[in-house]
Image (tube, rainbow, N blue to C red):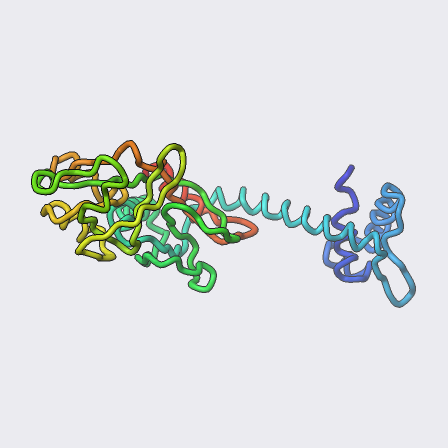
Length: 287
């Protein structure tokens, strides 16, 4: 009962004509008029001012229209979602991914995904900058760590932890730090920041460090650490294989900050297309 007359009301509100509303709905003008009159009676409010020349909305109708339009849009979206689920996902996806994490983790899974759904085309840009998804025409981006406030929608796919690592060779020559204050006496290999992140006594701490190598490549910093040049702090996916092989050992584990999220982010849309939703779910399942 609550839905009766809503379609007719919205059609009249948008066309400002009972006859045009009837034509758009493929029903009679009399039926439109009956439904709108019944709706006015049920709501106990006048919705339209009607003359022989013009139909206009009352103030109450203008408010009611905004809510009804939203409801009809939601119903249309729900119906479209069911329709899309019955079709094979297809079309193009444009993806933005951080370089190293993309190469090691995301792109192999994207390749597996395309092998499963060969009617989907995926274009991936590897970029460590936070690109504007809307301006760049991206459907989806993978973001690491803390998210900035934005209008984007985010879904957590996995998580990462930062480790401080060093080689046994470095320890033999220079020893190793056992507290955060001792880092100032060691050669710390720097990336894009001149500080490292820790947690001490339940408080986040940024410790400024210095060293004789600065590079925006995590791979290069790992190589320098393996060769005994200095100590490095990097996310786990750079280091796991070297920790397992014994080429690097972790230190200062008691000060490691909690794991942070790895996210799929995408622009707000009225409805997320099935192919994008499917890719997000695939990545979340396999990461």
